[in-house]
Image (cartoon, rainbow, N blue to C red; front, top):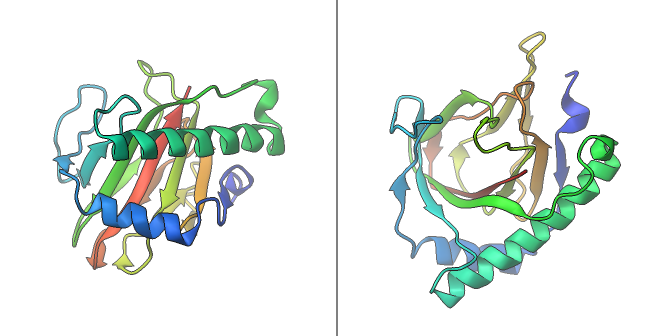
Length: 189
């Protein structure tokens, strides 16, 4: 895959103890139906997933802790990614993530191929943290825009996958067949 060098997976960024605590915490959250596109419409044919926005200014100390901790970890790794991929010449530094969401994919939940580039939000980098892998289906798949070749990412709990948010990196989450898939997604400008 031509674009594969820009899809980086960093293992063990978050320890297994922390990921299991995050999964237990995620099981206590209220999830909304995720929206699609700039207008934010609910379209479950395209995207069916539960979403809980993590807020660094939350009144919940637990949510505040996780949002700040994850923001720090992801921001640090995104800057390393820019250095490693030599994209730092285009994006000198990531100061913080501008959105951080917990996603819950239950049986048959999915997200069709899409890109994360939204002109109104100016997303530069995207990231996914895998929290568990005790489910079947639910694969994160990238598609090469040049030849339709696909690349599947191994869901290693505690690992973070980072890639450019632009139109060259369409990706999808295949339908979950059994179990529940938890992940955290983030974007930076």
